[in-house]
Length: 72
Image (tube, rainbow, N blue to C red; front, side):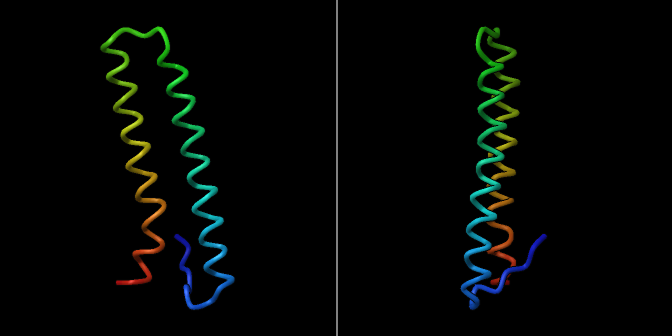
């Protein structure tokens, strides 16, 4: 994982760009899962929702862990 020095504006800008890129990647993955959900039965939709929940959990971890690591 990347370490950022938030006292350095360049590092702060890099962190923001990295967070944006990570969010876009996760959003694209979630969008693909939603497209796969169209026309599925209820049990299959539940499985897809579980997959989406896992993605959103990873999004939070990916976005916050570099920031939180600097403040421990």
